[in-house]
Image (cartoon, rainbow over all chains, first blue to last red; front, side, top):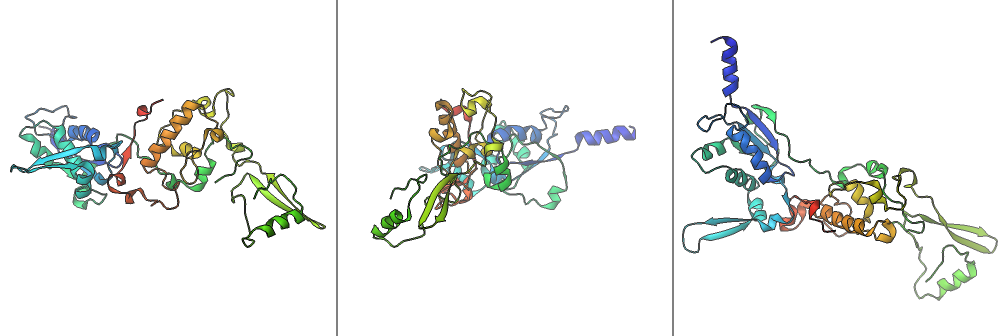
Length: 178
Length: 160
């Protein structure tokens, strides 16, 4: 085997580390995206028997966004196994207890329930904010693009930007500005 | 007390009006600081002339050109406004976050209704925290329970 082929072999089967910023992203749509990287579905060498999944670091999982009033509509069910041991936790309650759990469960539930699922989940590294240990961060070689742009707040624009932005209508002549 | 600001008020009448009131005389301001009408005072002999003058709007030179004058400004612009386009949405809102009426915005019925939905969406998503009543906690992260987490909306859910 030539040196080139050897390096090609290493590069093909090496585990790549990706980073993903989850701020203002839908966790359930993000899960479908992250699952491809975790399972290695994006690789031409993919096969269910081939352990070729990548690592994904997810930052700002505390800043995920849900559509509409889903924070109080979505319910997480748990049963302890004992009589009367059922609990129903709302998404916002779960998120205030653990800011990574909604996304972790979304990724876990997006995958098929087979023996590989637990090992695939081990390759997902979730962080509620942007503080990632440097020993993980130095492995990263790719950034996964966000599904939608992070909206910018009005008070984060400068006063001049807001003032100079083209206006749709003019006030009536006798209008008193408030 | 009714004062037509375009009318010239002789000082005698003004003094009578002020002295009749039970409350002490205060420096009064009928219009707030940001105004399209400005109050001017001119002291002639024996006569104080107070009049309101219309000030040219600051918006005049950055106004979007309306190519279809028969349509409302938003229909004419052909913009597909989303609830995240706050530089556009904030133009239709007072400093306390209230929606401006149709009399002032000049929008058609459909667009006014759609815009008011977009304003609500942007406010719920916490994108305009500085345009709120004075007693509000400006930071969206300090909101109560589920309201403190990020949320977004789908514009196709607006009924029109």
